[in-house]
Image (cartoon, rainbow, N blue to C red; front, side):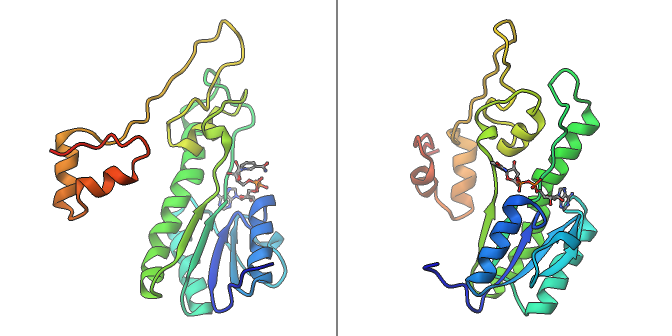
Length: 207
Ligand SMILES: NC(=O)c1ccc[n+]([C@@H]2O[C@H](COP(=O)([O-])OP(=O)(O)OC[C@H]3O[C@@H](n4cnc5c(N)ncnc54)[C@H](O)[C@@H]3O)[C@@H](O)[C@H]2O)c1
């Protein structure tokens, strides 16, 4: 261990699971106070503040963040590792409710936790948010289309078919290049040039 998180307070979601629990333990070893948020809070690592919460629920996530802030006085770190998938899912047999549920947890959960946490990070003078994603966001695997799509927010080819006769799928993930968007960025005070330098393929144009 060559880093210290002494004096820092963290929330780790999915902290009863494989990746989340390993991160929560590592943060605690580095000196952080860690609130572990999970549906199965009783399985959270010892020494953490276990909080039972459904990350797809606005009320649950808000209450979880408030509980952590009350216990630690502030927040500096958020790890979004809570995730689910429908193990039987292909594009042709997954129903909309199943698709929406995965997005509500894997994407909506990260949004909600960030939403409630960011004001406390700002108050603390800064912080870090880490979203645990997967290579399934850009490469496909059979029967895990919803998880792959959720990881890449609809981009990539997370639903890549495995049979030669299956249709190929493509997605374009371009930068913002149109005049209206560039103007909007400038209006925000960010500056189109600033965003251009942050866009890997540099597609942003001046309006
Ligand atoms: N395990 C791997 O090899 C691997 C590899 C690459 C990426 N990932 C990604 O990392 C993330 C975590 O993977 P993992 O292997 O730790 O999964 P896991 O199944 O071990 O843990 C997920 C945790 O999320 C919790 N959870 C599920 N739905 C929830 C909800 N609505 N509210 C709160 N908690 C909820 C579960 O109870 C569980 O404890 C996933 O997004 C996964 O795709 C995993």
